[in-house]
Length: 146
Image (cartoon, rainbow, N blue to C red; front, top):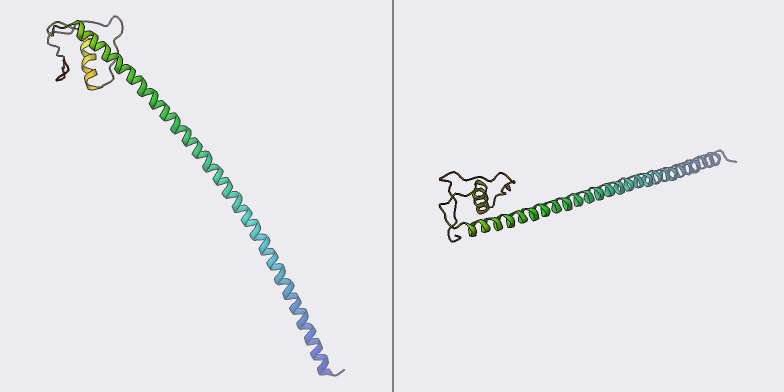
């Protein structure tokens, strides 16, 4: 065989082997990258799912707290309404019973009456606390509601 032809055959063989190695290496590199990318995507997907679960739990807790707060406020308003109705009934009862403005009334009555006018939360009198208002204790009378 001709030495030039041998040199060409050896060179071609070396080139084919190098090209084959490069192709196999490139293919393996692609496979490793795809595997790593799939693992990364799976990890990110798992983290995102965990985050969604935690967010949902927080939302549920916040909704429960809001419901509980709303219920507590409703109960307080209902109790306040009952107290207001009670105070108004007692004030009307005392007002209808005692017509003379100069007579002495118990301190508790004057306090309840005045507090009912301003919408404050009056302290309800306890048994045995009734007394006479000192002379000069003023009743605040609204205009047109005598």
